Length: 174
Image (cartoon, rainbow, N blue to C red):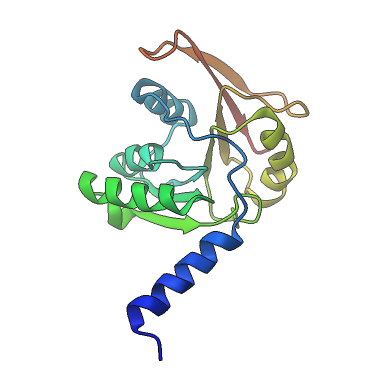
């Protein structure tokens, strides 16, 4: 009979092995860009923010500090673990849910804000899902990548220390 620790390890190992690799390489969003994304979406208390491809959780953590509830979604279990630790250290873990899931299958129906830092190709694949699952008035913000079939309501450029300029795109669900 397997020990409980070995059984747990095998379950986690099987879950990791069953997941496909991430669609994009992880790149942290600079702090100035995080704040600009939240400002562009008008994130406030009462919002439910989903960060698809959450990385280390910095966007959901910043949203939780503004009083929003947040959901970290990442296919990479290491990123989910990292975001959970960061949320705990920031004192906002109780305001954030952590989902080790494929963002293409994540249920978005309770989101009022969705944050993306993916790729143009992946944004285009997500477009129909966003329009189908999000309620009218929900906001979507993407860092660097627009969507070819969806004209943004607003586009801004943010300067950061890491890169000179970062394009941010906002869409509101009609």
